[in-house]
Length: 229
Image (cartoon, rainbow, N blue to C red; front, top):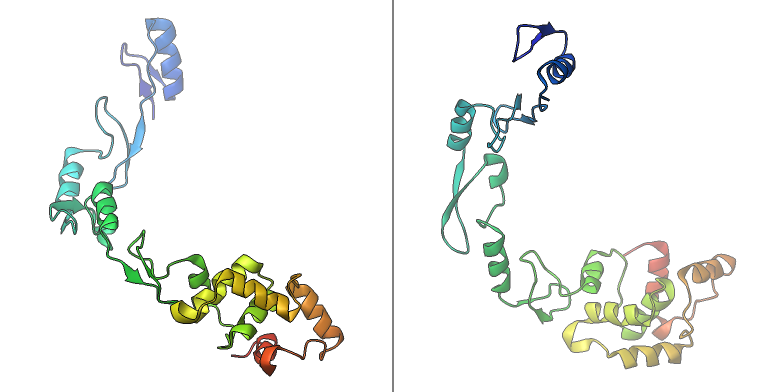
């Protein structure tokens, strides 16, 4: 297919050759047209100057506008239109309404520890990362506080701050310990220097009875080691 010069009758094998000819012969460079893909039919087309370049024709523009779903914003109650592909899960007309709605969310109780908190997003179920991680773990968690902090600190290798936060998530509002209490209990057990999980597992591999003495004789650590619940 040949390409004709817009200023004379000459024809060329490709657009680039025609553009070079036009610049040399007619003293004017031709700007390469901007190409876009039609949001409605998916065909590639040349964008006309001064247009948005979303649709290739008036028919596609009209069809796209007709193919919209009308929704009502949950924040301002105003109606707005969206493409069907964007309708699923859409609740607000824009970012301003979304942000305003988030600020007005009611306080809720953490599903893990029961602490009341103000969520920053409407999908929040837990008050902190520690509670979320505890809710998702499959490892056994003993009711005894000493055994719990021992497992968290020794077997999982959490530092003192992480151990404090995780025990708080497990024990909840009424029974959770203060940070100073957690540190004191770990020191009383003689593990306050922090054992890494790898160190403990190596000791058990060499001598299974090496850590047989657990707080209060609780054998949850053995269940943990075996992966049972």
